[in-house]
Length: 139
Image (tube, rainbow, N blue to C red; front, side, top):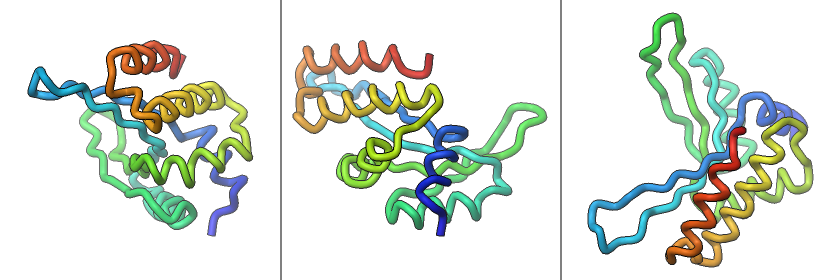
């Protein structure tokens, strides 16, 4: 089994915290906000991603076809269920801070999760807060 420190280092190098805002087909519906924690690696690293899944006890591993020239196919481990993010991902990285730019992304990610947890993303003011926070990620 992978150690906690290994997961922290792997996330610093290969992980990401993502926030997506999906517009819905019906104009009357609010956009959907999705939060993800993911690690993307080359296809030959699939066994490692399966170990990451075991470590967290949740999430999924997906194949990601690469169409760019001179690039390899990838696999992506991701957790996107809000309760799993709240119970597994957030406590791990709050207790064991990241060291790279991902530390800032994680802090913003937590703010977005807080808005979603309070259901504030269902109103325009909350959605605007999320959009503003999202613009600060991955800089």
